Image 1 (cartoon, helix red, strand yellow):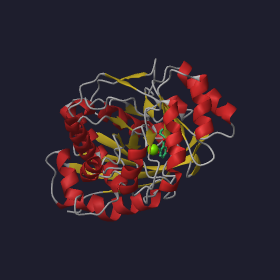
Image 2 (tube, rainbow, N blue to C red; image 1 turned 90 degrees about the horizontal axis):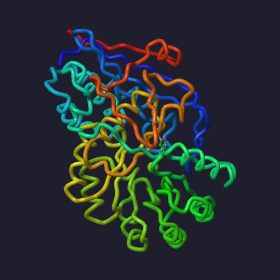
Image 3 (cartoon, rainbow, N blue to C red; image 1 turned 60 degrees about the horizontal axis):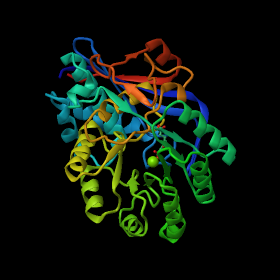
Length: 371
Ligand SMILES: O=C(O)CCC(=O)c1ccccc1C(=O)O
Ligand SMILES: [Mg+2]
């Protein structure tokens, strides 16, 4: 793969509504887009999912920019790349910075698929032509407001409802949602808001037939999660704690959780995401694709990875219109009866709307190989 240039864009897009988790409220979405250009003029696109502040993990929009510019892009210029699956190896000696790596690797996978004239999901070995999706609903200012959100999205056909919990917004809220919607597939995500001292409170959730409880304990823990899992009937799903297939192997060996949320950005890219998928498939552990409130390009990558056979549970990839007045891609991601039709066009399968991109670009910089 010959590269002519790489352009980074710092983006800011206003969401339709603020999104609140146990770690805070997000309204303006700041993120970085990566465009890799081949020598024949084709482009591949990637989206970095790091937030403005290090609340979900340690990366930020600022650290991603720095890593891409000073470390990762220069590594690409060193020698030509044969195939995008080599990118992860090229970056392996660089510690962490998974979201920065994933954004660049994703753009290279897209460029590769465009040049091969095949859909990205096919390049990854995906088979599904449609995927089931759920939705992640943030913390609201009252239980009634959350119930209204649940009602609205159940009516739209989302196959699974995830609600965010934190101390003080947990058992009563889950009980209220379950009382009103006895039959829906329901789960809760704590974003690391609890400790083992809360085990009894978390065990009280066993009564409500949740599909899983996502990341109840610390973002860097797999030991306490294993202790907690023994006290719960509800399966634990790990999100923040898993950054690699090695992390996944260790967590499954300890029984720290029985389901894994795979986020491409959190694990350093599509290649590592696929390795985690393959490990879990071999062990009969269900996986699903998480979300980071992505705009269209990140959303398209999530759709592509979800076509792998082991993604047996509905993920968090909701419709563009759940987040944005107007997305950056054409067509937008649409959900009908809880299903997304996977686009069969080359690359990510959606067209990037450049005029729309320019509207939300705060700053951009282009890098070229030095000869
Ligand atoms: O709708 C989405 O993209 C998923 C939203 C979500 O749950 C989330 C959003 C931002 C950061 C972390 C998480 C999470 O899965 O923990
Ligand atoms: Mg989560």
